[in-house]
Image (cartoon, one colour):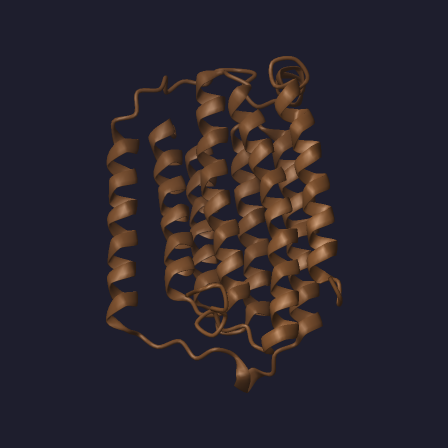
Length: 162
Length: 101
């Protein structure tokens, strides 16, 4: 059952991601991005990481993609003024290079020595929360500074007169 | 048939590769930013799978941090895009090269 669900949601994630990078209109990309995020969240649930699946849906599909859609609507580039994609030698070479990257990742993944069985309590809410507020407390606090900097930066950049 | 860690890492590599293709081949800045999100998603799959198979909560914590950084990155990136669009009225990355010299 797990194998079937993994293949199903993995295929949805990969397919939706390919749609994200190939659609002409950014709005179609954004909607496919939601599908890819949801499929990845389902994969998190398969790995018992329920908390991260919820965060994935709320922060990514909820906040980040809505931000994208908001900006797409805000700047509203007309269909005929969207950049025209041309197949150049450089782009073709870039795709081949990315293919080599995937093959290399697959080779590393193939020999990765991790226990194949099911170890309980890796990404559950309790385990993640305990680690987040003990071992990784400093990193967690610094994250709040990062978010503050991002908020100030975003407001400053988007203001009409700096 | 059980799914081992290799399958998750392979999926992670594929998602990352798809994101790389989007970043280096597209000309629309919005789609490039979305491709970066796809890459970060692929990394998250690897983190969560590794943390889960090793029974270590650090994988989940790292994925959490990646999600936070992705949200901050999207906010700043889109603010930059709005500022640039106000200046140049385009989302074509080849025309947004005012920092290049």
